[in-house]
Length: 335
Ligand code: AHG
Ligand code: MN
Ligand code: MN
Image 1 (cartoon, helix red, strand yellow):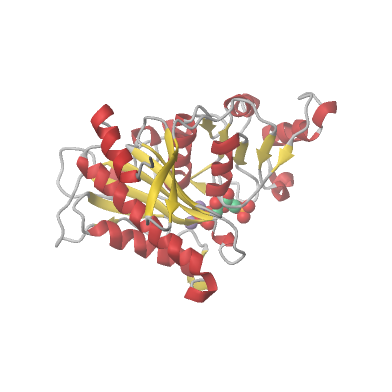
Image 2: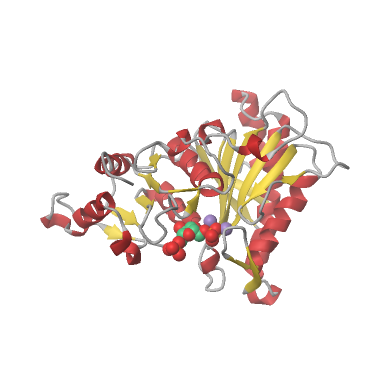
């Protein structure tokens, strides 16, 4: 018998009390929005959704049409249900308040509406990443400061990967569950529970073209992997780099591995490329919930106190023993 996302959420609440009705509504709405985005992605050139939108986001990145479409789908789906106080997105300069004509809820939703933008036009897996926080208690209204909570405060996090299958991956702090979109039924169906990442791996993911810009600890780790059976690791490593964090993380949740987007000297004043609130925090929580680890080289990502909404961070995540090793290599290093 197949278990739909709705049933999973209801039963999880009954058994463990982790998903109050407003949060359930929120997760169902996000899932519905992802279904809509999945349809647009699938249409591709037929839907006129490929190519650039000719605009830039707050981070100076050129926006693709699908970045904007996905952002709008998520906002429209989530505005009116009464479950949210506000939203924040990689593609919006500042927070988006729920309009006055709708009731205000207690939750804050953050998202990277379309992750892996460079892969849209070449028909490679892309996705949506989301994170849910609770609005701090005891005040009216909502401000950007309310979003600046460490990742360990998240109450739900997940992503939807639009690949050969559309798969929604979710945690509410009780392990990681995966749901595959059944297009005939029109619903997400539970296909894996209690996902666990092996502690050891022989597979790493990093953009090797940046090697000359890396700091010593990262150079050392990758160099040791590349030496294979002859080197200190005594085993051969394989490499994968999809350039969609969702797809790389999905592989790691499925069969292990380590993913890195470290600080590098191209833009030394920036701590990293990836965004703490929209990418690193939700992915780090999923990885930890599956038995893996996630750090910035010095600190657990979920412990980082954000100081800006669009803050960037260096990311090392995946199989626990590898992440611990790379983090050790960083001790005493400048980045
Ligand atoms: P986004 O498309 O949301 O801007 O994110 C892209 C990110 C991440 O998904 C991926 O791992 C990384 O950027 C790829 O960067 P490079 O092109 O530098 O390899
Ligand atoms: Mn992204
Ligand atoms: Mn994006």
